[in-house]
Amino acid sequence: GVTAFADHYFGGAMIAQAARECGLRADIAYTAVGFGGDAAAEIQATEDLMDACAGDPLVQVRFGPHSPYMSTPEVLIALVERARARGVGIHLHVSETAAQVAESREKYGRTPFAVVADCGGFTLPCIVAHALYIEEGDLPLLGE
Image (cartoon, rainbow, N blue to C red; front, side, top):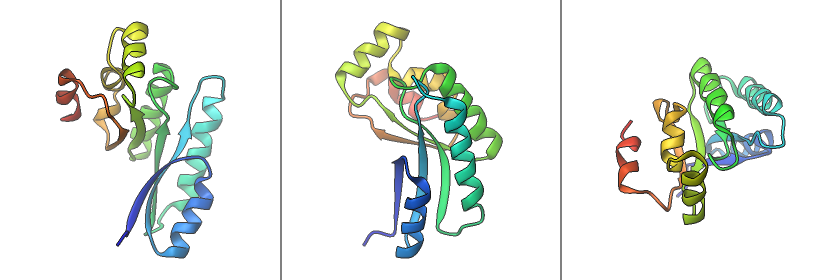
């Protein structure tokens, strides 16, 4: 049966409570976008959830930059730095579609995996969601 799950979205406090009620282990990442939003508020919301769940044997919280296509490199770097300072990892979506890979190459000259690596994302414990379009050159980055 299911004993643990990872979640990357909004509503982390409710998800944590549901996990406790069901006796499940939860790895929760509060989604931070940064585009058109308030990255500082999203970082604070994550830290508030971390503080609320501190010492919980069932719930751990990590930072959740949504993805390299929805979060700027500056937001990714800020979240990686906060995660490192708090001693936690990150959870993000990477290379979900061929269009996202093409857009990343056009915008940054790099694959989404390379953008995350450039921002230090793979120097921490990292959950990579979806990752359907991994290129050969991305594989060594995952080894980090």
